[in-house]
Image (cartoon, rainbow over all chains, first blue to last red; front, side, top):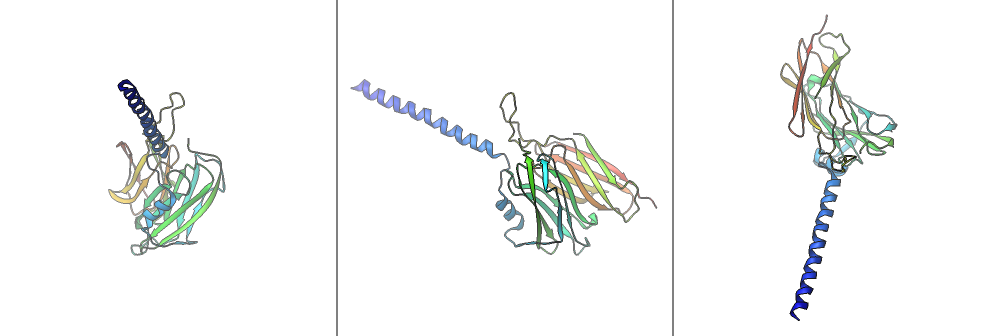
Amino acid sequence: MERRSFLKSFTAAAACMAVLPRMASAADEAKKNMGPNEMNYATALAAITGGKAVVESAKVKIEAPEIAENGAVVPVKVTVESPMSDKDYVKAIHLLNTKNGNARCANIYLTPANGEAFFGTRIKLGGTQDVVAIAEMSNGTFLSAKQNVKVTIGGCG
Amino acid sequence: MKTLIKIKPKTYAAGDIVKVDFMAMHPMETGMRKDKDTGAIIPANYIDEVKFLFNDTLITKMVVWESLSVNPLFTISFKVPSAGTLKVIAKTNNGQSVESSESITPKG
């Protein structure tokens, strides 16, 4: 009888031990797949604006290809109409994507010394999605523009 | 990390707005890619901050994430006030940093 109960508890313990590490490793695996800076678009947007309204505006222009054959290198240029004077200038341009693991591409903090509000770069896009530029003006308002980019070959991985 | 600064156009006068290209030879690893042979995850290694300074005054600061392409390009506008030195400092997420500079010599 004693032997039987011992065996029973032993097999139960063994089963537990076999299951637990597997669960842990699954969680680790999921974490690994998240990437170090995982953040979705809505969270990234809220972090930038702090809940303030963002107005789509023709003052913000995004130049990006409508169809990108290679998602690894997508040229993007952002121009914001502004006098860039000491009193009225673009504080920052935030470049975002809507579907990469990390929705943030770059935050560019400008000064009147720039002369005009412009930023150009090349970004990676994991698939077809919108590229969004948010301009933070010196008076505290946020203007935005977006462009959809069709990606034929994904650029992440 | 090799870097390159280009001013466009090549000749400009004081008061002109020029485009400054800063390029860095960097893999911009996302931390999500796996090594094809071993299957091990390649650790994240990307430029996370770029600063443009003119005569040691900050013009533009960028906070950057891994979504930028390999060998990233950063272009800004710059209104040339006078002759001086343009300095670019780039930092990576694992503490590496590189500094490069270009002299600004307006003509006319």
